[in-house]
Image 1 (cartoon, helix red, strand yellow):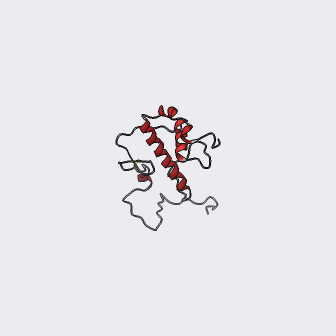
Image 2: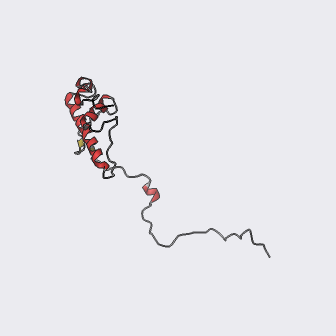
Image 3: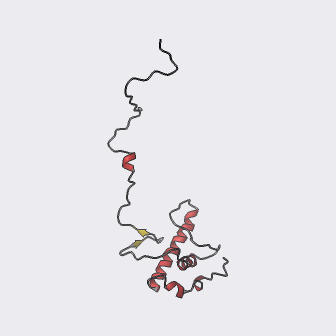
Length: 137
């Protein structure tokens, strides 16, 4: 797609986007948050971090992040859900109030209360078997 096909807010039209959000204000906030996420994605590429999701539609080199966000909304690639009492950071990501759930395998792999030693622990049950290459005398 070339830049001439997508001219900012003209394409997609505001009328077609209004059906994708609760209100025109919700549409503006939704598009702005997604545009911030896209900007954060581009700025983190140089640092090698991958915390944000990049554009989900084909983009041109100089296309603005808000135009990309509006096209994602129009093509139903992303959708908005109202979160009661939700807070967002400066990049538009949801801030969770509760602690993240810990890995449920960590207790199995790393049991607590066991003393670590530098000596290997090997336990044998019974007498060692004779090697098959030796003959009895």
